[in-house]
Image (cartoon, rainbow, N blue to C red):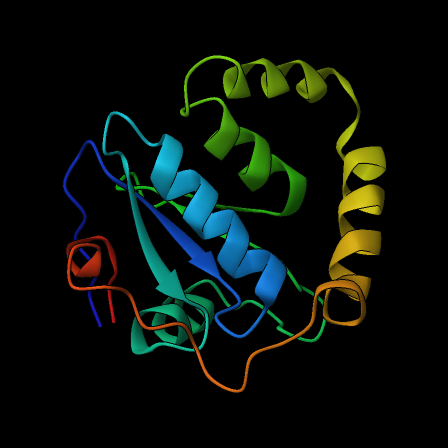
Length: 139
């Protein structure tokens, strides 16, 4: 599958059955005033295609992924911070955390990711977007 995004769009790949991830997607949608982000569950055809294309080991990468039209894919805390800086004030202030070395940021990120089902729960299936939001989701 060849994925072509418009130049001004970025694609967030997320765990579609994770309650924390779904809440995070809803938060981004609410604060994405410039309509930058599109979304796809990791379990979708788009998600599986990018996982395969970038040769991501899903056993080692339990993460949010951010894909850009420049064919870049970032994960974990770097993806989360790059998303935050596009959400405007005050969320964009999260960019200050880029001064923390990635191995420290990702240690915290991995700890939360490892415990997310235990702390926040899990759905039986991926979320289904409302008709108003359907255009923001790729299958």
